[in-house]
Length: 397
Image (cartoon, helix red, strand yellow):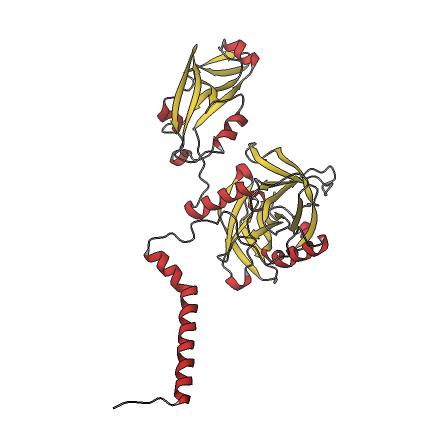
């Protein structure tokens, strides 16, 4: 017996099939790909992409400056947040709360936010205000005082979060247009513009006194409250994190500094993957050698790093580097002697701690480097496999 469909039934069947197919596509787009990646053993949420996709902006090369400013601001200012930190100050009679404010950039729909370490330092309470005026408590996931960076997280609906895309800083050039968005003096999501005024400025962390590599100088107005906010290129990508200003008055005089985003990306990826910032470390305490010190100790070189102490179990310890064996008194000072003097690393001369840090900042955990040392009057080359400091000693020295 044959069964014949009427024209109305055929139309209904076609519509039902189309609805089912559309539902399947939507389900796969939202859920299926993630499930397939999980079944295949792929990691999810392990870090940020190298350069993130952009909103639909007019090509900056053909847009007017005014239009570009407007489009970048409208697209990404909702991704810049206001961060309020509260610490409790104890005076002679009682403790009272003291608040500070800064800025930050939303990194993803999961509520991760990039800001400065000094914005959240010692905070006993953190609160993030979004562009829609909704407030959320935040927790610190990880920080890097060496580069004045921190990653915090809020639990907010994904629909309220507008990520600001990361660019790259290695291609930044002097004269390039930049835009800064932040909350100076509590004035939320203020936009200022300018250019890159200089690169690789010798700025040190106020917390560890270490040199921050590749700092970007800009004349875009940056004021108190801008700290932690993004420095953007004309495509709306973060190229730096606004960190500090030079100012005799406390306000902007056109000399501001931003930590390069390439450094920030390494920090963020480490925090998201490992819960901390992982840095290769020799595990030594060293004294810069000067001509005067070389004369006093009768050293064979006038430049280098004299190893005073080595952390047990560290990369330097495992490679066979030697620390001081005794101390000698010179005037009022005790000077450690008998340790190796580091004079080179991977073929580069080492004259100061900055020289060594610059090389280590380009390396990863597990990399092998060649270190040249003077041991007495003999020059030796030792292979060192870089590692973090062991356990409890994980404070970068």
